[in-house]
Image (cartoon, rainbow, N blue to C red; front, side):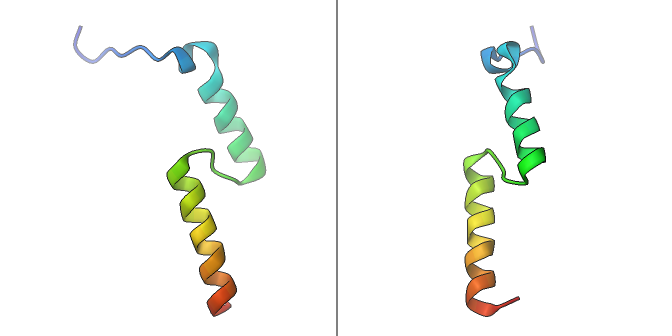
Length: 49
């Protein structure tokens, strides 16, 4: 079946819960999102922008 993938995390509801938490707190739940946010905070502290 082309175009069909199964994710047990989506099935159980983990993905939706993580998205909800990320929206409410403003903190991304993905590894790359957290790294990007932390990096931006460090640059902001150093350069004050």
